[in-house]
Structure formats: structure tokens, C-alpha cells
Length: 452
Image (cartoon, rainbow, N blue to C red; front, side, top):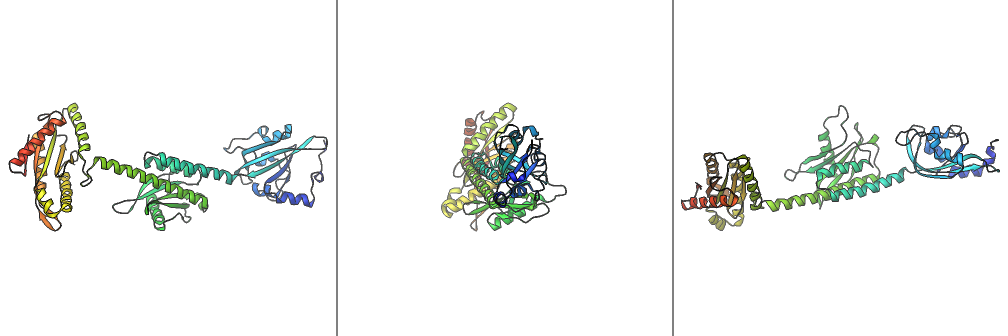
């Protein structure tokens, strides 16, 4: 079959102008798969200079592999199929390969070229770079994913890697770090260090992450870090109310290229979602704490202590171990509270709580169960002498003077001790025995320890 000349295809100035003004890439391929015509947009998108692609096999040059690296057989190629059967095709998601070996996502349409007798002699391919569209779709999916996982997360420990995964689908990140301010010292602490293994020879990753987090916190806004040997970095503050409680830091960004405004907004959105999740989890932790701990002394309350006592009794029964229940009632507390005021009384109770905790072993528990009433669980307790020695240590701690508002005040404690299983085999009977022993200590003159 005689191939038509280029004049048949149209090569006048108007034709060239139309081809050159179209933003989509266009090329014409003959029956042998060779590129006959390529417009300016096609050359620009594919990275070929001028007409360098013309005359080359189109499939071998730009369509040889799938995006995942698998070989793309020419017989499976929609462009080749149109040459074979004359059916136009539309492909919404594929990749073309540039001259430099990189690929980019495209959508394209094919249409057969026929001569006057209707015989196919080539195919026109019109394609469009859909990188921005796919990025926008990934951005939207990331926004939705961040919002969903922040709302549904059980803890921030599980949320951090989810945020890293979602951001990694849009940002070319190596690692994500989360730094939070310590309430006591206001210093930043690294709460999460994610990402791949650091590059060989990299040192001081944690100090560098904290240094960058400080820059974000002090700048109070998304910031683009400068390019370094490790790459560029990006950070956004974690805001709660009017406070900055930490920072989200991403590092390093690929090739130290500046991020787009959309990527900056995405990072700040991720930081805002994380801050909301932190606020919720902290609020839930406070509610759990308030339900189980005394607000004034931060000791366990009656509810938590009773739970621990039941668990301890079960363990002691199975292991055939002893334990002790110790009731402590403060002597001379009411006159001090009435004389110096409730604020001084509250301060005294906090001092008492600290002294009692210091007097106990790490395995023991002390709780505030009333105004000036405390109770302790000593576990394990092997012999009565050991229990009485700990109780005496608590009594001596309470007998030492306290400093309140520049005044020296003195109180003491009446302490009753009940042993398991000698004085009771359940919480109720042990409690009665310890309470009775404590009242005997008070009647005997206070500031003493009494065994049930």
C-alpha cells in the first residue's frame, strides 16, 4: 500500500499553528508503529527535543513498561489495538515514559487514520498529563483519611503512624516526627520518631528533630526548612485553644525541592487533626484520672483502692501470701483547718499524702478515702513485724512538724492494722478489723499504731 505524503496530512502554516497551540500532546503513528508527527506539547511532556521522536517506534520509546515496572507487550497496547481493528479508544489512567527514563501519568484517546478508501494507515494519539489531577485526588483522599483516623483513633500512639502513612502518599517524606511540650518544664519531648532507617553516618537525629520542632513552635506557623545534606524539611505547629503544644515535622523532602502551598496546607491540616485527637485523648485521660484519683492529693480514691484491694486479695489467696490493710486517721487536723483556713488545710493534706507515699514500698498503695482519712494496702506482707515496721514509719513521718504559710504545725496519726488472713478473709471483714484497731489507737492517746 502506498503511504500518503505529509502534504495529505496537512503541513501548511495553519496546520502547524493549530498543532503548536494545543496544550495536549499529539502524535501520529504509522502502521509500523513509527512516530510520523509530534506536536510541541508532546515533545515538551515527553522530554524529546524538537522532532527527535519522529521516526522512532512509539511503543518502544514511550509505552514500553507499566508504572510498576512490568513489561508492556505491544500486542496489549491500546494504541496498537486501534491500528489493528480501527476502533477508537479512551484510556483514563496509564503512564508514558520520558526520554530521561522517568514516567508520568496520562490519559489518552486513540483514533484511526483512514485514506479515501477507508483503509487504516495510522493512528492519532492525543494525551494529557494528569499528574496534578492525581495529586489532587490523593490530597483529597489524604484529607479524608486524616480526618477519619483522627476521629476514630483509640490513642495517639496508634494515630502517629497512620498520619505518617497518609502524608507519605502525598509528600515525598523519609520520616515524620511529633514533638510535644512537657507541661512541667515546657521543654519539647519527642513523642514519635517514624520513617525509614536513617542514612549511613547520620547522627543526632533526635536533637535535630527537636531543634526543628522548636523553630516551628517559635515561628507559630507552617514553615519550610532550608535544604541540607539530609534534604529539606517541613513543619507545622500543634495548636490547642490559644496554646502551641508541640510540632509536626516531616523530613527530608525529596531533592530538597520546596513544597507547594497545597502540601503546606495538608501538613497544617494533619497537625490540626492531631491536635484535636491529642485534646480528646488528654481530656479522656483526665476524666479517667478524676474518676479514680483524689483531686486534691492525686492519690487513688476509695473506688480505685477497693478495686486494688479485691485484686490483691485474689492474688494473696492463690499464692498463699499475706497482705495488710492499714487505716490512718489524722489527729489534730480539724483545729488547724479551722484556725488557718481551708487552703492551709488542703496544703497540709497534700504534704501528708507525699509523706505517706514516701514511707511506703513501691509495691504498696495509699489512698485518701475521706476528709482526713487515709488507707494503705501493704502487699505482700509476710510477717506482722514487717507490717508494723512500715506502719511505724508512717506514724513517725506524720509526727514530724509541717511548715504551712510560714508557720510550724504539728499533727499525728492514729493507725490501725489488719492482716490477711488472720483478721479477715475479705475486704469487708478486713476493713472492720483495721477500723476497730484505729479507734483503739485513738482511745489509747493517738499518735500510735495498733494491731487488730
